[in-house]
Image (cartoon, rainbow, N blue to C red; front, top):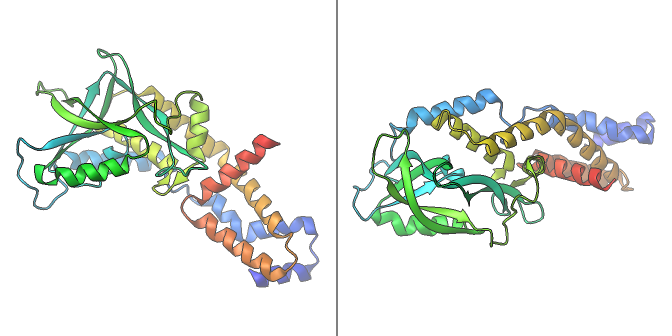
Length: 311
């Protein structure tokens, strides 16, 4: 980086051309690179979903030697990231649904798909029509001997506003089986991170588009959930989820390249105000490193959107 800056200095380039030269040499690939970290193509989502569907009924447990089932076991119902990310031991799993709820991206995430100053959005359930509304997901059977440890783990994982409740789960496809009593976690409207519907779908989508946290980009959460629903529950309708996917994909295709380029040129211009060439080189290298880390794209997008809103 320092050598390139010295070459630029010796070339007699105009000061207003320097940010563009540096951007083209070191940062343009960040815009042009394949959309990873959750910004997958439709084909990738489809393949991922098919893999889930193929293995779902043949790999009931994620343990090599699962404990035997007993009447003291419990079932956990997942309708968000638990559908594809069950990071706890289970001895059985079933596809299915619960009646009387609607799934909505009305919960802020400050510990998984966002951070306190830039929260993401994740799902919770709202009361719906008991005879019409259903939410699809996966129920996991937890062995009695592992129940305490798993519930402690989930209590911590869902600590940002979620509470346990108990209800009936119905298997999919419906085959006349008796309902299963399950535990699920719901973010109540009284919790501090409840965002609600104060913003319509385009605003929620923009928040998802520009957020990332310790668990990864917010868009990855959205796309993984949509892929799982499409493949595990063919024909099931979730208009809220589908609208958000379409909206976020549109932002990625139409807005993301320009926003990232604008943000990078702004950052580079600010760094070039440093007097010492060595300091400029160090700051540019730090910027490049930050952009290449998980969540780097979202950090740039968020900054560009803030600048756009303030102008």
